[in-house]
Amino acid sequence: AKVVIAGQQAAVGLTFDAQYQAGVTDRMRDMVKERLDGVVTGVTRLAVTDDTAQLETIGQLSEQLQNATDLTDIENKLSALINKMEAGGESLQTTETGSAS
Image (cartoon, rainbow, N blue to C red; front, side, top):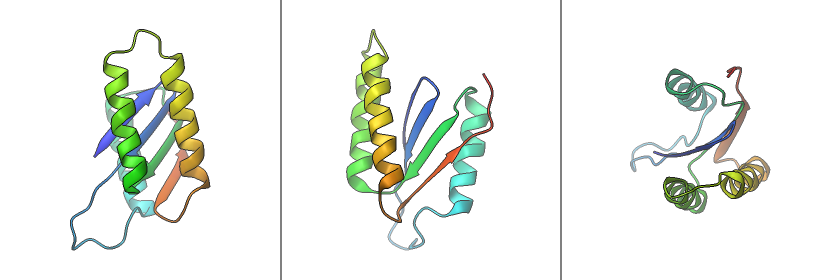
């Protein structure tokens, strides 16, 4: 899995072995949300995908985040990615989380 969190947003990219064919299901999304909520608070927007291009973008944003001094650009890029994930195909799921900061 690859994860990027900036501000109150998070994008999670998952990879599966060849035997798993179901993609990102509601159950999988709920498991990711539960795990994320157990590690970090304050995330109110979460998107989960198994799309390889979006997974690559998540990895790039995560690398940029490690060297960032200003989160504004990364938050904007993450928001644009989540918007794309929300508008995309069946391989992704999004949720508004109930976490409070």
